[in-house]
Length: 141
Length: 355
Picture: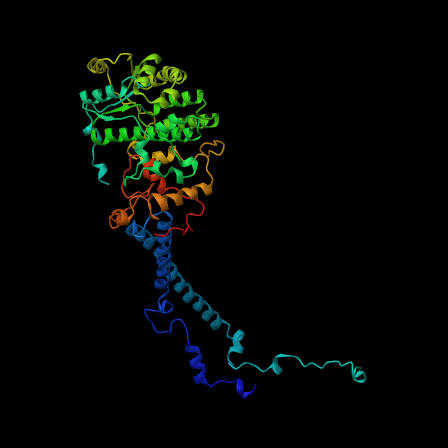
């Protein structure tokens, strides 16, 4: 493998820590930095508000009409669904990672290729290939 | 929640009764009903008139805008009906009257159960079919609508939980009715409500009394010359009326929840074959446009128009089932509530009028 495609350990650490979900610092303005249950519950609530707006519009009445109970229902139903969905999602991802780690611990021999981060050169992967050329029939035998 | 603590029975007394006055056309029935209500300290509910539903809370008279409405929505009042009885809108009028009489009956029941005061009803849902019969005999309504009318009558009868305690039938001969109509002096009425019409009304009442007798007491009087109300009161006092005939067991709550009873009774029964009642989605949209642009002058429905002085902060906490009016109770569905429920295919995306 040529040295061009090899990267240093620092570069590898930088790439691994760049734009990863739990590593991104929390900001109020970026929902992708929120915990998944907050992110999904607020998405549900936003959808609920849109629903209320369109429903009231369809029912020929202003947005404010029965906003409080409708908002409460949206918060409990859609917000609640989003909240628990987010909780479940985080739990599921943790569990999934734990399973994979455990399996890798049980069978480290299946994962030899990960030890060399730069990977193997093509010469080690592909079989040699000697093409037949119509121009040079005397070499065909 | 607190209505669990509200004891309805405690309000009931000897005069918490429903009395329905039926009778021939123009025989002095309304005056009698009023006097009866006064002498028994009951509430008098006058005969249903289309005017009660044609003028909304802002004082808009729908009849002023009929030139803008599709024809099926130009519901005539009685005078318009007398002027052109053979018009297809006669059936629409009869349909509205039927529903409104049903609703008036439910209002009467609600009044009795909520206040304990009795009610004297001037004509009712139960006697309304006599006019449908007469209109059919004169060909003012079509046969399909006539069948539809009786179908709706059966439905309405099913959801009315309590029958009246007493029917009072005032009978005047056809000649007397004709003479009284002549005295009123409306030439269109004289032309439309003729002898055939009145004879059918009389014959239908005679049949209807048999039906009334199954559930209620019936008092019939010859009212060719208006009699003395006090003598009728004396007759009523002799009747044992402390019975409680529950037609549909366990369904009395329907009387205090008119909105759902109405939805159950008068859903959108398919009326495609009733050409008088049928309207296309495009006509519905035309109607909505006319209401928005000319009548209400707002994209919002009755009760939600800021420009007309409605308070929009008040309904912030409203949580209504079955209707979306700002008030918890409405008297007649066909006055304003119908417009809240009235949609066409393009309602959701119609942006022609954004106030």
